[in-house]
Image 1: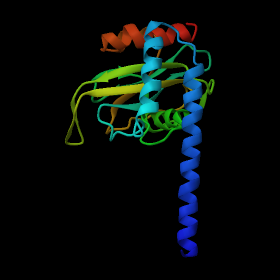
Image 2: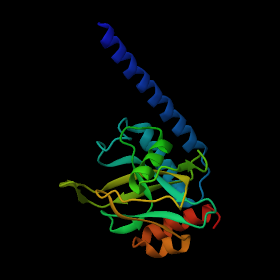
Image 3: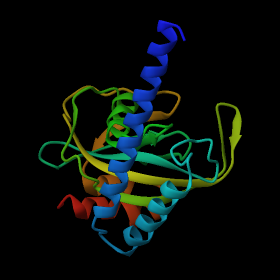
Image 4: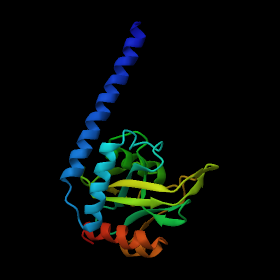
Length: 208
């Protein structure tokens, strides 16, 4: 084996080992996470079982269900929540995205916020899991291809950002980025299930 191939193989091995460590750390975090309500209790068991029993749980190649990371983004005094107008769901919604093989879901959540809202000053209020949920996704067309209905097994983190920083849309995913009061965030969403079961829960958990 040449020196170059040895170096490449070593880098791949290190990345694989890091991914495995992060996956085990995530499993421990989920195991230790205290469910807020019955929804979280049921979904915690579902998510743990899916990760343990599916090697491709973190990949969209698993077309039945895969892991995603979301962010509930608040400003410093918790008076505002950052929302984007999601092109597929046609609703104001939280921010987040697919793991796409990554097992460090906090990093995924932070990356998605920066990309979707065009901001750079984002930090975790805590590195602990803020919420978890199993989310249904209806079949839809994305980039010209049909995506069958499936589940997002989602881990949510509480992040803080500067509400004075200029925001910008990510045109292929959203068509608006706005800071709302928590009350207005509930009113602006046109997804009743999310309002009742997810957003209301997240607002309660942040103490508003």
